[in-house]
Length: 241
Image (spheres, helix red, strand yellow):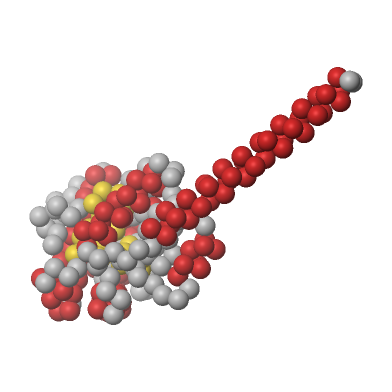
């Protein structure tokens, strides 16, 4: 028999044997990926479960093991209803996408975004809707380093509507700051702004305060490092409820 014919025959046989194996492997990968995604769409019943889900999601994100990547499947899972377990109040900074850094699927999070992650009446109303109507278990105020809004407050930037926004951040600035400002000073202001925002949320919303006291919800802070993707949770901070 011709050697060339034998080689071609062996290749054909090898492809015949391996193709089903690779097809099955690919199918299994997609199937189990979707199963994992569906598991994360199960209704979370407690604030602590929501916190754990966010922590695990950030870990998957850091390890490049995100499971919520099949968006067509995510849309199909949520086309009839949604059960967002957490409302995230965060900055408009384009480097802080909550669904991605927490590896959360479509329908898992309510997200409110405003420069400097501060509250106002519209944000509070959205939070009350989330916790009362949709039974969201957790409110997370997410700050981050290198925040332009915080920097603007420190630099006393004035610009039409921006001035009133930065004025809400100014109470977080250490009055004993020295110039030139260190990165630590800016970072410290951003962290304190998270704490003060939480305090104002509780003080201004009787609805949320009541739910918090009844342990129906938790309101905690977190801090995102845009240089490495890590989220530090601040729920053990004494200033946080």
